Amino acid sequence: MIGWYVHHHGAGHLQRLVAVTRHLRTPVTAFSSAPRPAGFHGDWVPLERDDTPPLDRTSATAGGRLHWVPEHHPGLQERHATIAAWIATHRPRLFVTDVSVEVTTLVRLCGVPVVVAAMLGDRHDPAHRLGRDVARALLAPWPGPPVAEQDPARSPVVHVGAFSRFDGRPTSPAATRPGTVLVLWGSGGRDVTDEQFHAAQAATPGWTWEFRVPGSPLTTGATGGAAGEDVWSALQRAEVVVVHGGHNAVAEVAAARRPAVVVAQERPFDEQLRRVDLLRAEGLVAVDGWPAADRWPDLLRQARSVGPGPWRRWAPGDGAERAAAYLDSAADRAGVPA
Image (cartoon, rainbow, N blue to C red; front, side, top):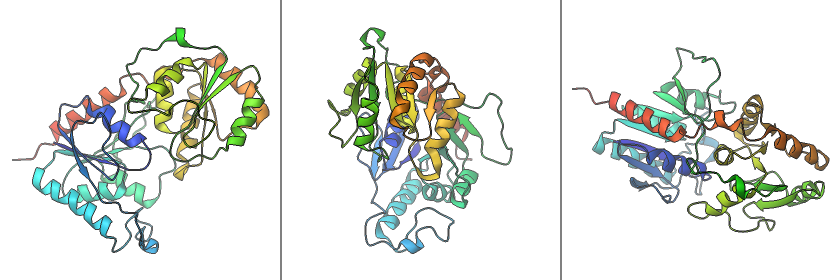
């Protein structure tokens, strides 16, 4: 048995759970404050929220050693008690956290080995260091460096490449509409205004822009649906995709093998800035923030010139299978001693 904690913010954590567990042979029980995602076939344990008022924010970081442990919060106490009680009853061989330093530490304190979903960015604060140090391994959904550099005193990093719900789907070059730009934005908040989108569109009269931006009146068509069919169709139509630098959105564009301009948004720990650094090193067009309108004609030409080739290393197409194979193997090796 594998336990799996899923953070409730954004859709990426849930989609990673679904993508990996469809390839696992070890049974999985998932824990989250988010709704159960479509396509997940394991057991699902709902958790109380730990961010509802009243909150004692002054105690939330435990003096800077953790990220979120507000004192005397009943939801926090209930969710941790639920996880600990399940561990005591089911004796899992392994636990995956995606992501929570607090759950990682709780599970390890219960004597269960933990694999942590690695995240990019400047994560050298005491809480992240704690979670990294107690983990059996970090599972990184991006390609490793050309030469592996592993500190023997740290938990190993297992690079499996990016993966998404669209991996394995055949692309359709015949569906591409030359001169079409797809703006693909996520639901985790955005730094870019509708006016900035409009300005970029106005500055590129030779291109037709299509928008998938949740909450924006610019959006045409649906924004995904259970299987993401509308997003996949829009990706196939696009000659160039303009996408924010979040892991899941980038992985979906990579799976579709579309030329792209990747734009980092402000996020905690500079996660998206670090991702666009890596994407630039792969030869892709990636920028640190939304560019001025007059830069867009050149950026779209650059993306068209680069093409989709660099995506093959970033997202080889079997990342979810590789992640599942590692977790199955780790669970086998983590058997309870006699």
